[in-house]
Image (cartoon, rainbow, N blue to C red; front, side, top):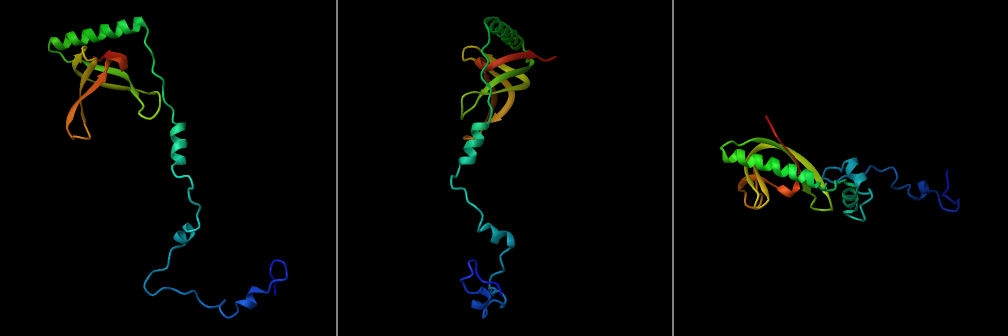
Length: 159
């Protein structure tokens, strides 16, 4: 029979002869654990909890805010004035707005495009209010979507 690793240890089959061929003990009150659960006991654990999330967050890409030139700002103001005048005449035009949404966790953000009817252009507060309803999570109340004029990259009136 085989000896131990170095040859100096006694043969394990000889040492454990009295118990080696006995059936495995099973609890009368609990079902046997699945092989998956038994293997999970020996799986490695995450010594640095949250490290993978931190790496994923760092790898997430964001866009930089695009600064409009003077000519582009004048064109945007002209379009907003035309939309405001339409609203004063009782017409709520449908527009497609591309605007910047700042990222809450890191510098930068992303550009989003939405198509909706305009309810109001509030130049004094720098806000354009759209017909789209959004819910406020803390109060569960609904309000209309508002976009900061300073965040608008482009606005186009839809036919």
